[in-house]
Length: 74
Image (cartoon, rainbow, N blue to C red; front, side, top):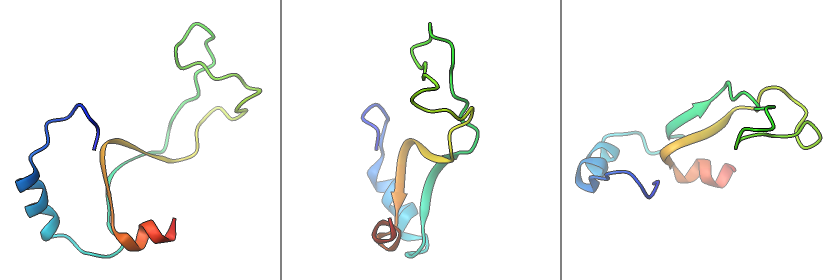
C-alpha cells in the first residue's frame, strides 16, 4: 500500500476473501512506459544508463496484492 491513499481494511479484506487464493495478482501493470530523454525533466534518463525508448512491463500503482505462490515464484 502506498502511504498516501485512503485505505478501508474491512472492505478490502472482504473483497480479498472472495478471490482465488493461488496465482492472484491484484494491481496495475504498465506496458508502455516511455523513457524521458528531455534533460530538463525530473524524470530524465540518459541513454548511457538505459538505451531503450520504452521500459519493459512493470507493476505500478498505489496498492499491489500477490498470492504467496507468486511471491515464491519471484
